[in-house]
Image (tube, rainbow, N blue to C red; front, side):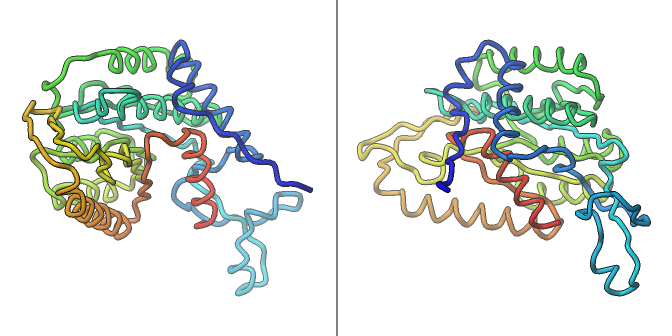
Amino acid sequence: MARTEIKYLDPVVVRKLKNIEIKAKLIVEGFITGMHRSPYHGFSVEFAEHRPYNVGESLKSIDWKVYAKTDKLFSKRFEEETNLRCQVVLDISDSMRYPQQGMTKLEYGAYLAAALQYLMIGQRDAAGMTLFDEEIQFYAPAKSKYSWLVPIFKKLESVVATTELFTHKTATAKVLHQVAMKFHRRSFVVLITDLFNQQENMDDLVKAIQHLRHEKHEVLVFHLLDKETEENFEFPNRPVILQDLETGEKLEVQPNQIRSEYTRMMQAYKAQLKQRCMEYRIDFVEVDIRQPYDKVLADYLVKRRTLK
């Protein structure tokens, strides 16, 4: 039998839809179709405990390593079975408004955040939202009702529609220290950001991540980039004026003269990020904003199931 190629939802198509709620629904529907199975239990957090296996339950939950040692059947129970609380933390600083032509990282992040919340509530978990730049600009605690998403989606729509630049810098580490204490203990924190910080270094970010883990939160980082330009530095081979969207500072460069060094430094930066996240059991997912949302979610879920 010929293999059927899964068709994912093009971000450009999503962008043309009327409002965020419709976009979120469509992304989640595409995600479920792509998985060919229910996504429920896919985002389970920390392993909680064993309990005796009951006849008739799914064999997938059995811990076969324990069976090999004890000759008794036990099932794994995960935190999600006790109402998972998911808090999506979205970077709305001006660097997220790149590129200025087409879909920005902020738009992509907003639609991804909305889809995650819609998915969580659909599986009877609780979802909340935090928007930040240098400070927390909006906070909605996690709740498990669809009606709770209405004001959140309206806020997301207003943020995406804003065009003002050079007013919202980034202080990711500072904000993560704040949210580490603000969220309910053992929450599932999903950070959506480009990790471009003006005043912080890697150690600041790592300390903030350590703080989240110390408070027993599970953390997932979606690192958003326009891969073609921000990672591979694919600009026309002519003088290009680059502008910092957070400060307004401009710099004229010749792309072919600095591309090699730029890509080397970017790869080194990303490798360090991945290594530090791995050290503290943080899921780190690279996302090219030209990727379909449902594919990003499906690929991540497959990865989690493989690692369980």
